[in-house]
Length: 356
Image (cartoon, rainbow, N blue to C red; front, side):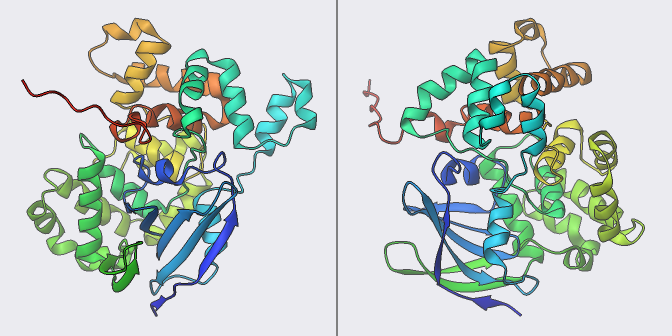
């Protein structure tokens, strides 16, 4: 049964630990939009309204809960942002090379400091942008497996805006709907929200799925999504069985298994491993990452016109060796610096071009 609420709650979390704008809008999830100072989106079967209350805490409201959610909202949100990431293994690894780690309380800030010491480019990124607060507190979200698989099938040869439209259309076509009045700082506004569909809802629409998705502009991705849903349906014990098995696998096994699904190559499989399966060391390699690597780290790659399998593995291994067990998190910071929406400092006026 769906429920609604407007009760405000707060979580102690500094800006250095969580940058809401960047984390929710940098192409990890595609279900969030910014309205004035608020971020509103659908995640883990809930409609959220989140904001930065002050330097030490974030505020949130659960505007609505879809029928397959529970009421442990704070835990769900903290898990989604991975605010309680277990860094014990990382701490132990760094102890072997740095004795003062015995007395450190390892958190995201310490991760950033460590990455700065091993990488001069990362150091320059931090120094040039942290004073403006744009690239601090960047985390990897922990997202539902099915949504991550289908969302990143949509990401092939695409941009964040178009991917967001496709993922939203998937929800509109097959997900549960909820209409709400939402206050975004200028009085209540009527909005419609659609939960990401369950496996059962997708199966119900499978017969006409490819046709409907093509009508919505999915192009060749329509066939991939329909075939992936069909394959997951036919898995032993269905999607639930698939998820249980893949969550038990190591990274290489999981990556290989995910690539058996239609429309999924190494990059999309790595996105799923990093963002849904908790393989924090994984670095998905796309054009942005290739350009960063060739420019700042491995200049010999500039002669490559494309990312071959060998180059892909070389780049992934390079980052894992440099940044260690949370290399995927470090990569997310570097990736965010390449996104147009985050390049300009919003506090600085943009100079208008003179007409000629």
